[in-house]
Length: 449
Image (cartoon, rainbow, N blue to C red):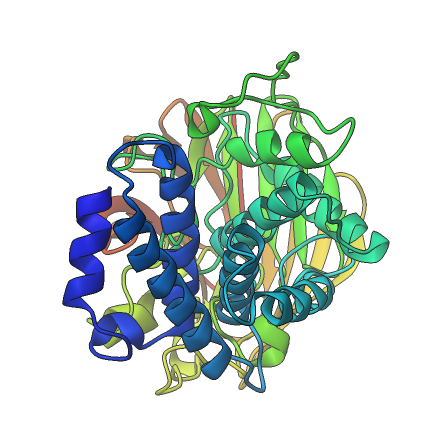
């Protein structure tokens, strides 16, 4: 660690090169350095000369962040990363110049950002489950650091942060994985285990972090927090819950679990990391993924693929192909995405109205102990794509398809078996089976035992 840090500092002079370009990166780097240093602080390898070199670079990190705060018209996870970098540096290195000012500023701003970036129901305003995870790591580990140093969030911020942890636990599948709505670029703050092979959507460990922060919070224990040994381990018990502000629904009936995406346009209407996926869903049966979100692909290295994966055409929702609006040129803007309104709901039935730029349509979903029923109504040329898990074998049969051990029956419309791209993690894509259901003005299908 001493050699790595010394070499990095020598090779990356302050303000020169790509590693001094984005304050978010600088903040996350500083927190990881500090955590690593804490593990070796008593080692004889930590000489006084290295300590001074290390502290000098941390001061430069703090100075850089203050001079390049990512406080734009739309504040996001970038600004949060800036704040946590400042807070970790100033809390763990209180004798640095300006540390007191950095700490006071970052604590005050963090309390504000928790309320800004998580809706009242606890869902993150990015419109992405993976970014909910990232910001929860940023804020959760930092709140834990504050606790250990006899500091606390405001009551309002602490209550909102607890709701954010509760929301992510409620969204988990029996396997501990979350649905892949919105961008998934595998961004993390800390990775404590399986660094090269951790599962992108396994979020079980966040329950463990929540249990460290909040009394009475259920611990689920996973290898991600291997240093934490809870006294009680709890299994994930799927629930039925609606998040009206964040636009998510999770429903459980017997062995079936439905995740329904109705999120508003992310980042206060800017778009950011959400997709044009209003009305889309994921479906699991007995803990096995059946219908899956297509994922993300990648960002700027392949703009066409980026735009496909975030477009309405890639998702499990009704669309009119020739009327779908073009993706904006800016890869993190989506102010014209399809909007969804939940006009009627119960614990097993949801009626959704979807409004795109050039058309509108509706979707009705009903989940029972025997499966999922879906009815879509709209203009001519309406079609629905269903993306299935790569693990499934699909065979065509009369009036529908055999999907693994389940049956897809088409009641109105016609179906054709195809394949599509599925991205289980960032910059990774595989071919997976898909079914396109077409017809007008009504499509109706069910997936049952």
